[in-house]
Image (cartoon, rainbow, N blue to C red; front, side, top):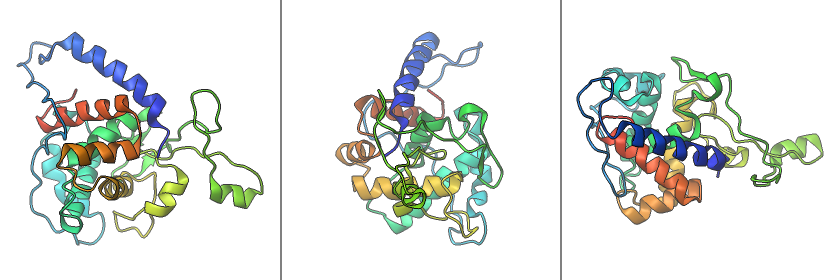
Length: 247
């Protein structure tokens, strides 16, 4: 689905070294961190408070207190956490059979783009990630898939190779099918973390079915990126978030 494979391979090595170095302790003389749970699916994390999913504007802002209470410990911006929580809440109502948790979305976003901060990008208060994050050109060169951007190719009259877009690294064709407006501005924008998080949640639920089972969760992650290393890296981060810490 995306071009996160290379980034995922690098990220899992960094994570492994970091975990080994800290030995699971709190570091800097702080209290020991809780151990990262094993197994899949990762835990659901801190429960979401009740809020009005259908409120106008950027509805995710209603989760501000929930997000601020854990942002520092998790190493995730408040705005990004709001986006993940909102997406999980929407899916809990529209697809209660799916059971996707905000921790899974957070794990994917961490591996893909460090929650929208890769390469010096920042997540604005409206969820917009700037400068836009783009993956490498998927032109079939060594280590890369060959993926055409069909819409751009049709406009240009020649082959235009795709690049993954935004904090969840969507391929243009996938975004055209699944992209959704989550913040009420009337635009489905892959560079907005609200829109991207809800789109990712919809895609994962469609591909995995019941994400509260190991089989469903694994199937969903493989649909997003068919790599066992990628899946394990997402699992590690998501499981860490589920107990209130970063990996």
